[in-house]
Amino acid sequence: MKHEVEAKTYYRTFSRAHPVLAKIKQGDSVKTRCVDSGGQDYRGEHRSEPGNPLTGSFFVEGAEPGDTLAVHFDRVRCNRNWGYTSYRLGLFALTPDTVETIYSDNYKQDLVRKGRANIVPWDIDLKSLRARLREPSPKAVKLEFDVRPMLGCVGVAPAGDFAPTSGPSGSYGGNIDYNEIVEGATVTLPVYQPGALLFVGDGHAVQGDGESLGTGIETSMDVEFTVQVRKGVAPAGPRVENGEYVISVGSQPEFASSLDRGLQMATSDMTKWLNQDYGLEFWEAHLLIGMVGRYDVVTVAGSMALRVPKKHLPAKKTA
Image (cartoon, rainbow, N blue to C red; front, side):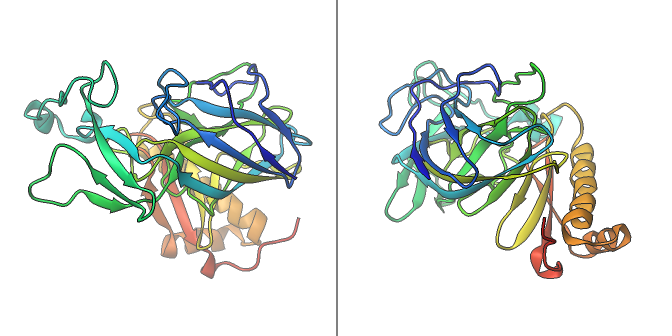
């Protein structure tokens, strides 16, 4: 069954306490929209306070704690012809001596949003699928890029009464900000609450590795996804799969621990994934990772991901 759902209220926490937006069944597809991180929709109207407003929750019938929820993104498309980014890199991405001499992040007051001077506008051509900085005008380089829409926030309600904001990430997903969560990708998450209680949001038209600006090109999105439930087997944290790679994400809040910890989390999960789903002995998984594994910085001072090419893997074991 296909559901068309549009939220009237958006939330900024991953919480089991929020009213359910829609109940869906395994195999069902959902067509919906997400506002941008500042709360503006596809018409540019403010629908929520800033801070990664979330669309959801989606209650998946049959999903129980200890299961895995798989969310396949059938469609992730920009639905507005503009977006915005920060004016400069986050200071967390720079050395102290660079910070001492950095330019001011005050560009133009109220240019993109009232009360803000540190964000700049980008134009998004929905036909050519190109994004171009509107201002300031670059002199030495062409700041125009192919659009690659992604979702920063994909997550479920965590265990108990824990209700993290839509700023950090964790084992439940959250504000993962991984630029591989695009159309055609499947995100798998552990289920902590009955129905899983899925939320999505925080669309980016373009974003480099690490989200070193603290933003991508923030914009609103049309989203379609299909859900599946795998009973009785839950990963340690988020996983992503596409046509080329299986990807483990060491998902943790930024600044909570070093990137080393995120790398260790991703690598440990990958060894278990290759053993459980693909039948590799642990020693085989270790050596394979050592030869063909690729690491991505997902968020600066936060999460890491480990990619393993599918071409090196045997057929996936049947459940």
